[in-house]
Image (cartoon, rainbow, N blue to C red; front, side):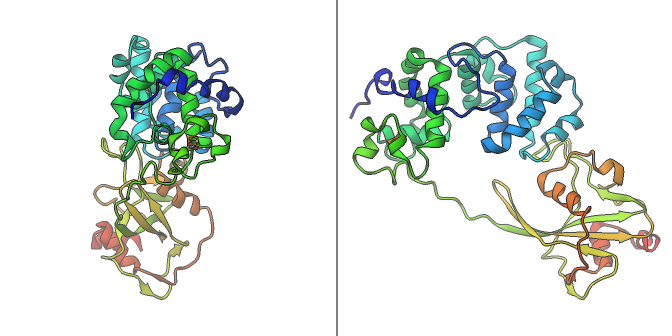
Length: 370
Ligand code: SF4
């Protein structure tokens, strides 16, 4: 069945959005004019990649306070950028944002979608979203919410992302007619607030034309993607302290964890626990840390040694005062926070000597550290 013309089909969305929109700090009051601060749109879009709106809001406000313009972000040092991003995860986004701000500060904003796509970190979706929301360009941006809404409205069988090119082409006249920013946000808002996994069709402005609703197939459209079973790695997360300093891995220059300091981790399968509290050890309840392609069963430990010793290869001593200012990932922040609490001697844990050996501490260093 051919799709109906988008201009008329989606028309009720535009006025509906005026009453249904959530007030978000990056959202323009006037949806029908170019955004007064395209940088705010860029920041919000990068933050919203893989992070929920409620989590992003306080980060966004602090970020704009700290780095209010592309120029201030471009001039900031990497550590302060990572520190401001700390807790949001996927730190590559912070580096991309700084790199994109550096281009914009030097050359100004691109003048078309191709130019936005060339900014660091802006894939086709983010570039299209910035184009529509910041500049009112008719560049269709389809996120997961928009795909779900369109799949149901048009009764798309199979994975709607495979129809992305057709859907974008279909949407362009509607964006021109109803306003790129308004219609883009309305479509996403409908998916976020009414057309969720279990849709609230009674609140939907398009219920009278939704084919999935008419055919009572909203539960099966779009199909839920099956997730591959993830391996769970079991590890000890170790804060080794001596003379008021801690051992940490300094940031890698590239890769997913670039820019972040890390506590040493030790493979629990290779370093089994023994019963009985060992002296100098504190522990806290463990947790499961979930990443996109990996899960970790984390057991946090604090090992206190009396004297410091030369740091093993790949690790550096960091003072307690410095530790608070270092950018850490979520897992490692959690251990830093735990250190301020009392903890308890572990019922089972590896022997301290085994922990030191696994870290690469030599026999001489071990004697020095007792
Ligand atoms: S009628 Fe229901 S299923 Fe259809 S678009 Fe609206 S909320 Fe989604």
